[in-house]
Amino acid sequence: MKKLCIVVLFLLFLVEANAQQIPRFNPDTVKTITLDSVVNIKAKRLSVETFIDAIINDTSFYEAFRNMKKYTFIAENRVFTYDKKNQVDGKIYRKIKHNNDGPYKMEYLVKEDNGKVYKKNGKYQLYTVEMFDYIFMNAYNTDFAPASAPSTGKKSGNEGYKDKLKTLIFNPGRPIKGVPFIGSKTEIFTANMRQYYDYAFHSGMYLDSIPVYRFKVSVKPDLSKWTKDGVMIKELVTIFDRRSFEILGRYVDMKYSNMLFDFDVQMNIEMSYFNEVKLPTKITYQGNWDYPFKKEERASFLILHKDYRLGKDK
Image: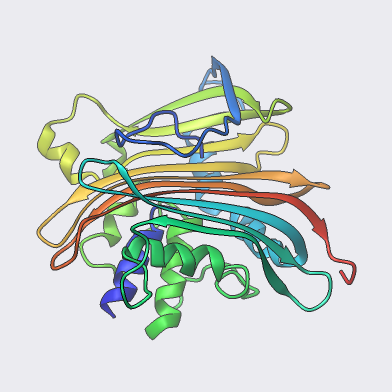
């Protein structure tokens, strides 16, 4: 149960990161968006409510992960772990072909490990890296397989926690019941929480060809330190395709500390189109975790998906 709680919290931090919040090596060198101008938020089509409603009601992010199962594609996964001075002390690199030409199989094209990656018993040094494997090595087969989007129905045990994970990733702004000290802090679009945030709109270009809007929700700079420390979601950025209002990217910056844990995490998910189907292309993570009776965990990920194609039997 304790590990499941940590899984939920970890996945909470699954868009365009406009600043490196943690001062150390950043594996993400793939630049995908350029901004040009501030958008007039009084325009007839655009308002804060327009963007918030689209974020809350979107199901396409979830569907994009589910749709991966239909495709053969290449995944390149890079994981870095750090010591207390934020110097790299462990590296993992995986290049994997997810093959759907017939019975599903996952083929390692490259598998490299360097530094402090494993314990003597063969398990990963960091629970964060173990969760990386849980999410990105197994998600293609399990977690995104159900035919329905995240539900609000009551479930127990593993299924209940998996349902919470889906809500955390794919429905930002909604409350998450059953996650100690955290659940209500994700509900940033309520009337009470909106007083702590500013909203900004920009137009831009994504992948040099897709016109987009960037909707940024960020903590007001003039809040007291006590108020800022109590607000967990520091920034939520969403990238919208201007042509269809489809969500193409999501970035979350979160930081929170109490007697049970201390974390500082930024995570980014980006999508692109393959024959007009939206599919995940880039996921990045930077995070520090510290919780009782465990070694502080510092890690970053860069996950790239490319060369999507439908299997011959699809």
